[in-house]
Amino acid sequence: MAAVRPLLRIGFVPEHFSTPLHFAQHHFNLSADLIPFPSGTGHMITSLRSREIDVGIGLTEGWVAGLGRKRDPSTNQIKSGEGYKLLGTYVESPLCWAISTGIKRKELKSVEDLKDAKRGEKVKMGVSRFGSGSHVMGSVLADQKGWISQPSPSETAALPFSVHPLQNFLGLREAVNDATADFFMWEYFTSKRYYSPSATPHPLKQLGEIYTPWPSWQIVSNLPHSAAAPEPRIEDFFEKLNKGIRYFEESQEEAVRYISTELDYEEADATKWLETVKFARDVRGVDVGVVKKTVETLARAGVLAGQEKEEGRRMIGIMREEGN
Image (tube, rainbow, N blue to C red):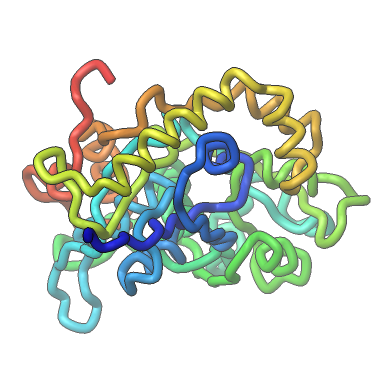
């Protein structure tokens, strides 16, 4: 008698983007243990490496940063990350990161006020965790603004911000209101409902926004899985998630109802978000060009210590076929 395989343990961020995953389980019998990670991709990386979860659905920049080449400050040696592979594409559209501060922070009026030279000291950037999307995108912002000092080949690029890990969205909102942090970056529609003096707890003020220059969400796993030797539970997950995405696209009213009643969003914001998001037609496989572009951007921003030939291919477990 064949041994019964344990349920696939899937980490996800319990925000509006998780709706097709919910539909996959609720309507199409996805057999998996769905484990929420409100602190985001960085926490999932830790859990993947410690084998607490098998699969993660998270932000492209977070996954690539975790697998890329970094300089160990203690040895000055460059090492590549490990512990999981990119297996699938979840969301094709870019992510809009809102740049926020506390609603009463009168000294901060725009993104330009975050440059350290204007204050004589480093601005305090709140992040959920080191290596999270909220951390990585701070470097991308600084790179786009030209605020990163260019290092020598043996040095790491210097961020103009000091970095303060604050666990989750609630902790970040609290920190920018009590000045533990000056600003943070989080997905726009998740942040939007707090841009009001009456929002509780810890209302926010928007300073600006920035879009990822790549598709925003990818699927990773620490399980052995390839086109030549597929893992049955992952293949079943891909099939059910594809069905959940199609159901999501065909059932917009149900999607808005779920997002506005079960998650922390206003109905109008959920409806508006639907106009901006594009999920993958088939989640199986990853485009090596997307990974290459992400690596190049993160290396330029100082998140990664350069790149090697075929760096993107090393990170991918399943390549996306042309035309998908």
